[in-house]
Length: 583
Ligand code: GLC
Ligand code: CA
Image (cartoon, rainbow, N blue to C red; front, side):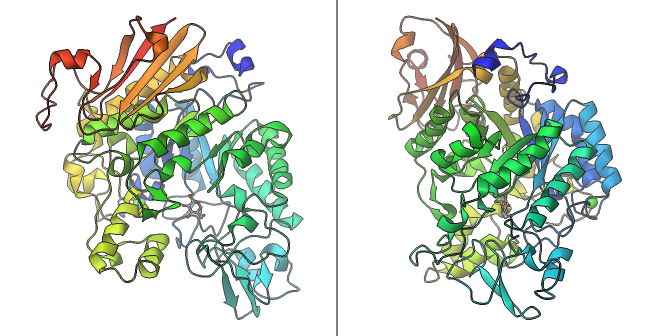
């Protein structure tokens, strides 16, 4: 931290010096692209890198500094790209390596970094390594995967038991995810060498770093002991999460990255702050940031499928726990959405107060300390899709959940659970305008378009000063131009308030106070004692004409506030405000 503050970082990211500046990613923000549903350039109904190329200016216009591509490699799509059959090529649906290089070049010319998804806990069962490995124990690829004569009792996270019998080899292979995602044997030095070669392949091409898929699962406990029988789905986790050699293996990968000064972001399902510290700080530091999951469980338990009512207290505790633990030691990866979670407005906000909650949610996380990630469509407030039948869903985990749990409930109730939880809600085509197929494709899209695209789309929101899209732009620009919002200390105020999330960022004599109402009714927010008697400057608000005029936004609110009450610190439904103070 101290170093960051004393070194003169030019916050204009085009000028960020990569040399000797390991922390170049700190002032940045990223946009995640799940290509299949982003933009279809060649008109076959599937998003592709031609479409991405055409939309790079749009991405830049949001104010982000980089792109994370979910896997764009050849894949049979058992898990939509997270089952890779060739690590050194582009899925033919998306284009080819030449098209990728064009995208990379154009992105760099626009000042956007590009990071790739590195999925090395498992491959596809159609990867040539696995095809070879099945052939027998004396095959050169025999030990690339985890084979046993007898399975242990582990469940997979996506599809029944974690072991599948392979007739050809006459043994069982381990798959922590779907059957078509056999786990690699990372204890085999040859496999680790493959990973390092793959990293160099993309780094040599010019990519700037990696998001590393379920990276805390790659080292398994020797002997693969049986898990506790009463923990369905996750019973083996104690033996494959944060495994015995994880830090050695990641140190090897880190060395590759050091040669290129690129950065590494690990996805850490179920990671605790305590274990994350080992990845992010001290002698075992191997990752620059980690995607943690605690804050994604404010309305569910472990997976979105086990749904509970939203609790702001839980959300605040999770946010603040990570902020305090990493302060001055590590760095957070901030996000509310990605391709694995339903849309955030439908979860933590309100589709009824769509614009209000969509904008408030942006401010609730972008101004925390860390590097913000925005998932495609989040910036325009896309919401969950409700399909009529389970057969219309395509995500392997949704399908398994539907057919495995709550089987005694009636089908409608079970489908409702899928509406609340499915990853497919994050994977509907991007809504560009109100023409057919939401402007995503000129032919029938590969997946259902959310029918709300007439109201929720880029074109409309681009033209509306008060839209969710323009609010994201304001947030990112405010953050980018403020050292306090990037590097300043984080303090939460009134952690027990059930309606308001209030946090402060401070550096030297400057403080920003971010106040977010998660209530659909007007609620009062109190001023922290340290600001008593001080007048803050309002620098951002998600209601037009704040603070006294209603500007029409109250038409749908039963309970109105008088001007006096507004002045006294009442917040309208899902209102957020950011004040700047000097102390
Ligand atoms: C990660 C990915 C998810 C994928 C899983 C298995 O959690 O984000 O999409 O299904 O790993 O690769
Ligand atoms: Ca296409």
